[in-house]
Amino acid sequence: MRLPARLGVNAAVRTPNKWWVFVTVSCGSLMASIDVSVVNLALPALQAQYHISLAQVEWVVLSYLLVLTSLLLTMGRLADVVGRGRLYSWGFVAFTVGSVLCGAAPSVPVLIGFRALQAVGSSMLISSSTAILLDAFPTNQRGQALGLTSTVFALGSMIGPTLGGALLTWFGWRSIFYVNVPVGALGMSLAFVLLPREPGRRQGRFDLAGSALVGLGIAGLLLAVNTGQQEGWTPRVLSLIALTLALTTAFVLRELTARFPLLRFGLFRTPGFSPALIGQTMQTMSGSSNLFLLPFFLVSIQGRSEAEAGLILLASSVTSSVVSPFGGWLSDRFETRVVAAIGAAGMTGGYLLLSGLELSWRPIDIMARIVVLSIGSGLFISPNASAAYEHVRVEDRGVAVGTLAFIRNLGFTLGTALAASVWTLRRLADAHSLGVDPNSASAQVAGLHDTYLVIAVLAGVALLSSLSRAGVSPTAGAQRPVALIEQGSER
Image (cartoon, rainbow, N blue to C red; front, side, top):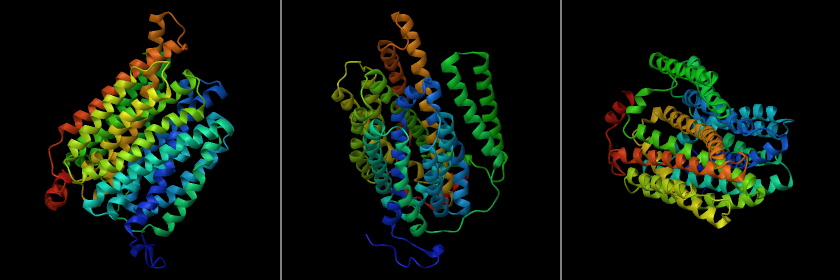
C-alpha cells in the first residue's frame, strides 16, 4: 500500500489510494465501536455510583442516540452539499472534543449533555463514511470493503469491553471517554491530509423544518417509552404517543412537499432498498437490546467485575471480526438475500438460546450463545448493506447512506429503550407472580427470559425481510442499465 501521490496538490483533484481511504474511514469506525461497547458496560457502575434508576441511567446512551439519529438525515444532505471528505474530517474534531468533555463531566446530567455533543460529531462521521468508501472502491469490491469495515467495527467492539472493563475496574468511568482521544487525533490527521475534498454535487437549502420535526418526533417517542416503563399507560404517556404520531405525520407531509427534502421517498422504490432498511432496523434493535441487557446480567445480577464481564463479551467481537469479512466476500459472489437470510436465521437462533439464561450460567454458557448470534450478525450486515446500495445512483449515495444510517440508528435507539421497558415491565409482572421483590435476582432473570423472546422476534423479522427481496445475481447491479437504476431512485 503506497501513500497517495501529490499530497501537495489542490485537494479538489486529489485521488488517494483506495486503501488509504479505507484506513482513514476505519479510524472513525474503530473509535465509534469502542465508544458504544464501553459506555454500555459503564452503565451499571454509573447507576451504582450515583444511585439513580435504570430509566435515568439509560439516558447516558439515549441522549447520544437521540441526537445522532435526529441529525443523520441532515448530515446526509450536508455531505452531498459541502463534500463528504470535508464533513468527515470535521466530524472527527467534534467527536474527539466531545469525548474530552464527557470525561471531565462533573455529574450525570452534564455527562448526558456532553454525550449529545459527541453525537453531533458521530452523525457527521456516519453519514459520510460509507459514501466515501463507495466512491473509492469499484463495484466488484464494495462487498469486500463493507465487510472489512465491519471487521474494524468488530475489532473496536473487541477492544472496547476488554479495555473498558480494565479501565472501569482500576480507573473509573471517566477514563473510558479519554480512550477515544488518541484514535480521534490519528483520524483527524489522516482525514485532513488524505481524504479528497470533492465539490458538493448539489445546491439548495437545508430542510430545517423537517430536521426539527424528526428530532422532536424521536424525542417524543423515547420519552413515551422511558416514561411508560415507570408509570405504565398513564394519560401522560398516551399524550406523548399521540404527540409522536402527530409529529411523524407532519414530518412525512413536509418531506413530500419540500423542494429539498431530507428524506427522498423515491429511494424506497429503488430495488432492494426498503427490505434492506427493514432488515437493518431489526438487526440493530435486537443487537442494541442485547448490548444493553448483558452488562446488567453479568455485573448487577451475577456480581461479576466489569473486567470479567468485558472478557466474556469479547466472544462477540472476536467472532464478528472473523465472520464479517467472510460475509462481505459471500455477498460479492452469491445472492445477497440468501447470505443475509442465513445470517438472520443465526441471529434469531442465538437470541432464542439466550432466552433460557439462568443465574447459574458459567462464562462458557454465555459465550457459546453469544458466538451463535455473532456468526449470524456477521453474515447478515455486509450482504444487507450491499443490497441496499446496489441500485442507488452515484449522486444519491449521500442521501441513501444518511437514510440507512438514520433508520439503523433509530433501530439502535428504540432497541435500547425497548429492552429497558420490556425488562422493567416483565420483571414487575414476574415478581408479582413469584411473590418476590422486583429487584431480586429471580425476578430480574425471569424478566430477561421474556425480553429475549421479544428480541428473537425482531431478528425473525430481519429474516423475513431478507427472504422477501427479489433474487438478483451478484453482478446484476453492475450490469443494470443506468436509466433503469435512475428510474428506480427517482420515483
